[in-house]
Amino acid sequence: MVMTEMTVGQDPKTVAASLEGAMPWLAPVGLAAEALAALDRPLLAWIQDPEYNKFHSDDFYAEREAEGDKLSKLERRIAKLPPRQSWRMERVWSPDEESSEKYDAAYEQGAVTIGDRVLHPRDLDAYATIAYELAGLREDDGFGDDEDGLGDVDPEGLDAALEWARAGVCVLQQSLPFPFTDVLLYSELDNRPAHRVLFAYADLLRRRDAKAAEAWFTALVYLNPNDNMGARFIAPGGPAPIF
Image (cartoon, rainbow, N blue to C red; front, side):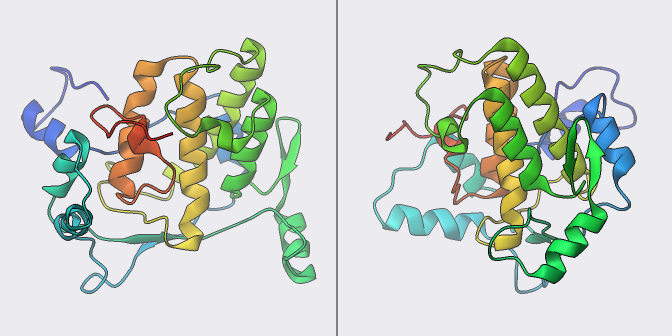
């Protein structure tokens, strides 16, 4: 997000500091607007025990350094943050061989048509899966910082893929305050669809506009310093790639 002189009521530097590491806000247009119109309610999101579930970035990175890791510029910035609240998301997932008949029936009952697809409007994994499918990519094609092949995606397929990933992010953002500067840890199983759709959007966006994607990869590391998705190797100031 670019801060301008149009900021009202606060010093621009104060505002910029408060937005450090926050995921950018997406306006729900096009397919995203259609997805939001289909929502009967946002995904539930809540702060876990506010006293015992705070995330201490300094302790986390101190342990990393004790294990011999050298912190990057990005990680050193995050290590200076005060303790932050840990959040957990409601999880809606696409039916599979492990889901129960009861769950499958509930999913089907809540499914709607968005674009030309039938899905539950709160199923973040579905948005990411459809996006990668339309781009002709596998989800793991986005990992790492290898720029080779980033442009080898059909432009029309990429347009459609970005629309779906954007829609998933907009669904997610209905459930979180803005700016969201707390943590959404990947170690919580229910939080993983949020990370997948955010990474999908960042990964697809960098194939169109690498500069615009930087803030998204940075936000993923702030959200989850353990960075199970590998965003820190793509974000500005992150560690050198090991892939």
